[in-house]
Length: 326
Image 1 (cartoon, rainbow, N blue to C red):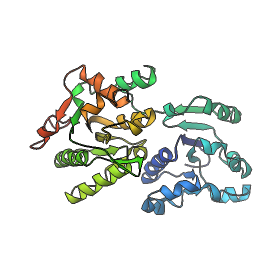
Image 2 (cartoon, rainbow, N blue to C red):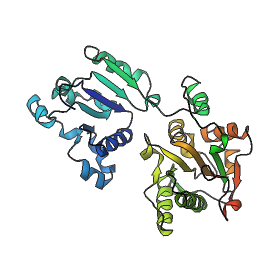
Image 3 (tube, rainbow, N blue to C red):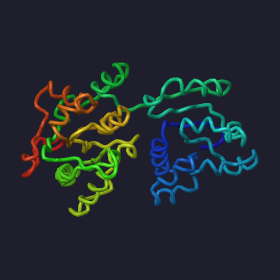
Image 4 (spheres, rainbow, N blue to C red):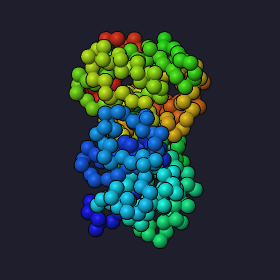
């Protein structure tokens, strides 16, 4: 981007969301700068940070005056940050808004941001703001009706309800590690690996998502033990803003919903697939204590069109009934 082009700011609710956008732009050689909180860098994948350190500016390293700002942002017209970073007084003090005005504002994962959070920004930049673009997740009919009151519509070529299946791993048990925020389910791990092996054999584009980091680590370890690619396993937060053709989702929980009670996180998990999704979970749980979660509601909605459940025993031979494997 040259300085003559319209300046643009891309924002999201979370550092993770902004990071995902930055990684995509970086791979495509787009010229930009990314503003992040200094605390967030400790959670960044070390190798990626080493590659991107020239474009990443932590909040404690923001320039102190206008001249330093010009040196730090040479010929830059694209800035990435969280929505909260736009309210950081240091950006006003260093003159960044004068050098790179907020003329175009792109808001990713907009559905997860309350409307009132935009109001002060629209007022603050009303003298320069020319265009605002809102982007959210692809909305299937179920997500649109359940999460967004039917207000968000989309058109999709895949209409067959066989694109989503649930595998009942009824012998799986959730195991807490120190606190309810750390849980794993080894029977689900084994089943996820079994499905991943089938998708890998067919050379399908897929990823594996779970709500708990210990489960992510266990799945990664199990994939490596089977000599399968392990870089496709993500915690739901780290995969926000990304998509795969097929998603294998491990819910972990068998007793209480835990993180499944979080509507925004579950919404993200259920809207990452382009063609199909396999949910590895516990049928008794989703019909019991988990029935009021978004995942439980999806299961009930899909069951209206036929049987969506596959018993884990049927997967011990050649996997059957998986999206993309017909």
